[in-house]
Structure formats: C-alpha cells, structure tokens
Image 1 (cartoon, one colour):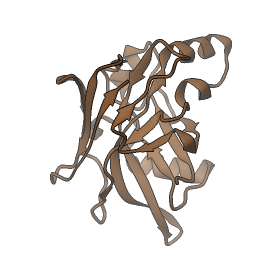
Image 2: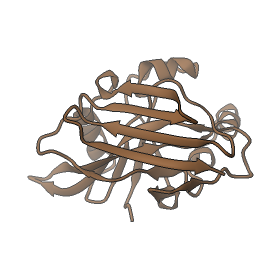
Image 3: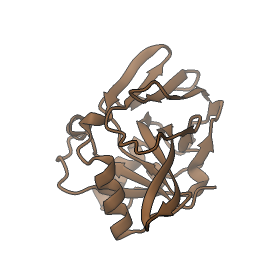
Image 4: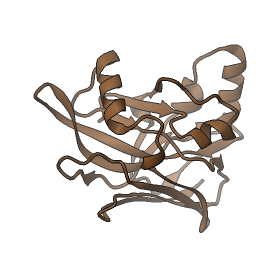
Length: 203
C-alpha cells in the first residue's frame, strides 16, 4: 500500500493550454487517497457519480529508502490519473478542492512496476495511451515543465518524501473522455527500452 500519492498538475505546457489553464510558475500539487490506487487492473469501472471521466496518462515514480537523507526513486510504472472532468469543473467554479474529481476508488490505476536504472534522471521517457487502438496521448518527459529532480526536491522540502510514496508526474496533451466498452493500452518506456504497460477494459 502506498503511503502518499502525490500528483502534479499542468506539468506539460500543451496540456495546460488545452484545458485553458495558465502555465504554472511552481509545481501544482494535489493528492489522491490510497484507495484510489489499483495495481494492474484488468477492468476500470466508471463511477455513476460522473458522466465525463477523462484519461490522463503519466509516468509514475515509486520511492525506495532514502539515501544520504535524499529521496530515491526505486521503480517506475505507467499510471492513469483518472479525472471526473464534470466534477472538477464544478469544484473549480466554487473554489473547492478536486478530491472528489480525482480521488474516487480506482482512480489511480498503474501498470507493471519496473525497477529504475541506477542514476536514472527520467528525462527521455515516452508516455502514451491508446483507446480502442487509436493513439490519444503521446509525449515525452523531456517536455516536462518541472523536471523529475525539481519535483523530488520540491515535494521533499514542502511535504516530505519517503519509501512507498508515489508521484504522478503530469500528463501530455490529448486527454479525452472514456466510455463503457472501450479498451485502453497505456505505457511508459525509457530510452533504453524498459517498458511498463497497462491494458484494461472500461466498464
């Protein structure tokens, strides 16, 4: 079980623009409850509370034990920051938190966990998702506004990071709604070819 699930919003400039948001000057951080986490689910159930659930594919970092009092990334996986866009839009209008829109049960599915290479800086990872065989999102971590070392330092300074914490690092442009009956394939792949996939049906 994860200790904390940190998520970074608007970390790709083009994604911020597609949603009409300003490009941030500092990391936009929100949290998901641990019950949102789902490990390699075969089925993702859409909640009855929302009529507009979007996929946001991301590189997810899993932290290991600290070393020299610094946070260490032990492994990585593909993850989907599922977002009830209608609930999020309503919360934004009222100035309320996004927890209901982002943190429903199963709203943080991740694929197979892959050990990180020693000294990996995660600067050239491909991130993508297909829906019914059609590519919806595809990007590279080289386009992150805030690099992985920057995110680790920021989160550790302000919140604290420790073994078992997860970090969803942001999504590239192309987010769109999911419908019951669709099939998705999401992935992240390193420059060396290490790959995490998540294949699931939407119900």
